Image (cartoon, rainbow, N blue to C red; front, top):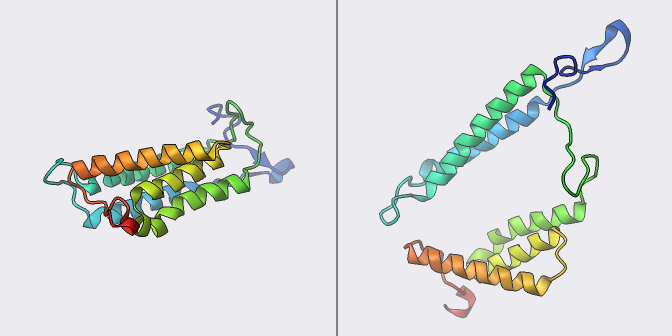
Length: 176
């Protein structure tokens, strides 16, 4: 983002009829809307719990509030004329296009738990999602990724169960 006042409002066109480049107001509004969705979703969740003192709604409420604040800050920056340009990263340049296969694989990994959590359980769902995300990041070791995902999913299931949170059966299809 540019802080130079001379470059903060780029002009398009030529001559006296120049106009300011369109500003991405939609971006700030989408971030605020996402925060509001999170806050609305937590309206029925408990903020506190008997065992841990922290309920399931607390972190989602914090995330939703943070998104609303960040969205407002983004709108302020847009109103000031800040430019949002792609930045080069360690191993990627800002002008590279997204890999649609990797993006689709990661999207499937995010959606997968909706359909597999109840019939397969947390460990297998985590194993599959972890493997898909690792594949989206160009991992070439799917068997190792499956093992890592199974270990992490199993550990999460046991830890949450130990805290008194019920995540369903360990392997519901097998009766565990």
